[in-house]
Amino acid sequence: MRIIWAISFVVLVVLLLFAFYRVFDRIQTYSLPNGSVELSVPYSKYLVGETITFTVKNNFNSSIQVSNGCPGEPLSVFRYEKHKWVQIHDKTNIKNCADQERTVTIPANQSMTASFKNWPHLFNKAGKYRIVMRVDFYNSLPYQDFEVINKPKAYAAVHSGSGQPSTSTKSSTSTQQNGVSEHEDANEGGSATQNKVYTLYVNSSGNYNLTSISMHVGDTLKIVYQSPYHDEVRTRFTPINGTSASVSSVTVDEERHSGTRIFTSAGTWRYKADDHSGNSGVVTVSK
Image (cartoon, rainbow, N blue to C red; front, side, top):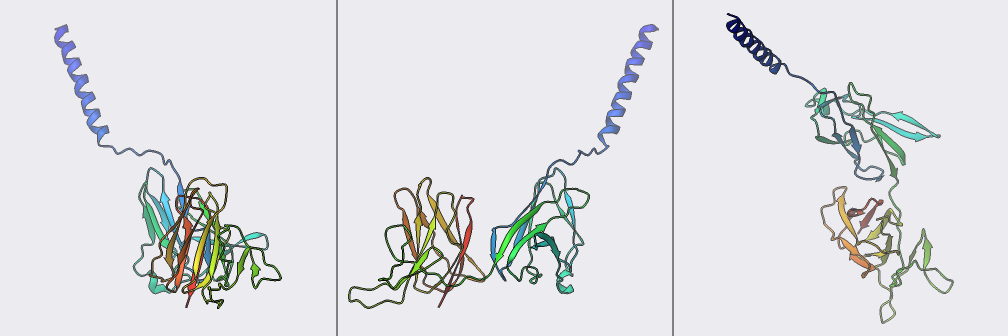
């Protein structure tokens, strides 16, 4: 009888453990939120009137929710005025909000890209700006700073193979502006041509000496690699502001210290060094 009772007790314990396992297996458990939210913009400088886009990446192990305040701006926007950050606002047409969700969900480890296209008055003047991301139920407040600059005036540069900025003298027709010189090239017969060469200097970190250049169709952009030389620097031109024409990149390295590109059509391109964390600039070509 003792053996029978012992066996029955063991069987009962096993059945109870199995039952508890089935019950707990059906209960969904949640892990504590762990991670961060990243907010980024493609460039550190923009032209007045240029559309600014942003990307939100959810690095949390669970989805996040962001309230949509349309017709108000999608993110909090601040402008640096009189040594402090001042929040600014703009409203879009209510029709632009018709197809939008009031709460935007970003799944774990995914990102979302949007723009301020429908709020053009937020960045309508030059200055320093900050956009801030507010995430529901989280204390995280990621932000990103950038600068908006006025559209560039015309610049030009001396066409020289020395790789260094030229110095204007009394006997020369050149004029010096912001580290670049301007002159008209002469052909063998002595007559001046209309086209100019604009020189842009870049270092091994991908930083350019100019962030805005204005040219005309047929002008040449010369990119000069400043020493010390390290890895190659490839300048890529990205069409912006409705420009459709593409421009080939220019690569400089330890052996080839300069390269040129002739712009044969009008438009606006942003230039930046691939795989480098340096600054970027805008070249505007007019007819």
